[in-house]
Length: 177
Image (cartoon, rainbow, N blue to C red; front, side):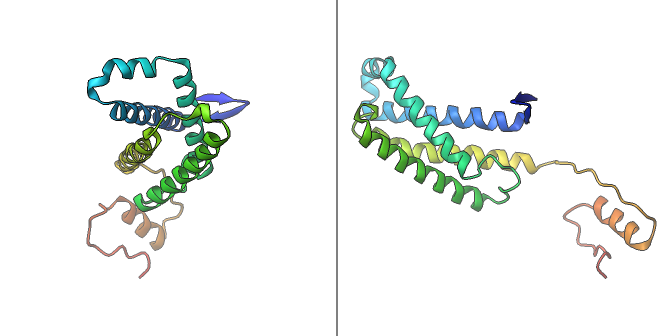
């Protein structure tokens, strides 16, 4: 586990941050490739292989990461359903697009070029959504929870039986009556 300023950062959070950063970069590169075209591989390499493009990508990826952070997409306790993940992602990337538009207006040299940002936005949303849904799905499968049940009364016994029963069971738990 990594420590930053004396604070522990969980490994799943680091994996999620790095994966989001890579997916945003991949979406940008794919959008550049789509805009330049498959026949312009040499043009693609010349465009991507500059310090200016690296700086543009770094700014866009950082703004997207900040938007994801401020929309609580790195707080695992808040994200329970796929619908909630989708809504928060759309809000985050909407804010990121507005922030990038302001940056592009203030500093025109940060713009990628005609049509690249318009292609990149839905690609990044789709890639990030697919990753988040796959991660959420995998996170809930086979997850064990430790539980301490104190007491041997009828409620404690019923709770212990309920917690050990398979989830697709149609039996009544007997806890509430």
